[in-house]
Length: 103
Image 1 (cartoon, rainbow, N blue to C red):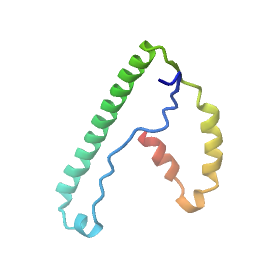
Image 2: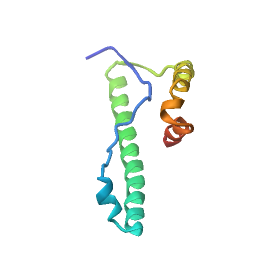
Image 3: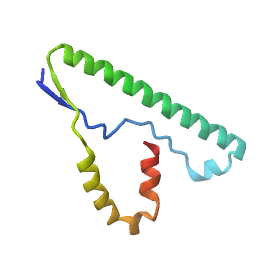
Image 4: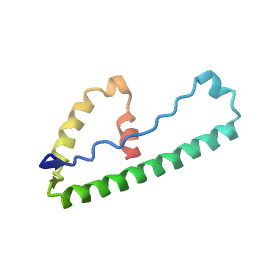
């Protein structure tokens, strides 16, 4: 078993549904909304279950003697934000904020 675990909270695995635009456009708006609402609910359920499972594993790792660290990621995020600014022209204004709002 490894001796150390560093938790960065940088990612939660997601299920990314994909629908062909032509197919999506044939679905009535009310049904599209039902699908979108279900996806939001499903994403939350998936994230909650993932975090719970991770926390259970962390407890087992600690009980087995592994050293678990959760560093301050603020400096990394600040540096990353500077890099993101370089791509606003490619991504469009407000894209980064939309991505961060999902967190």
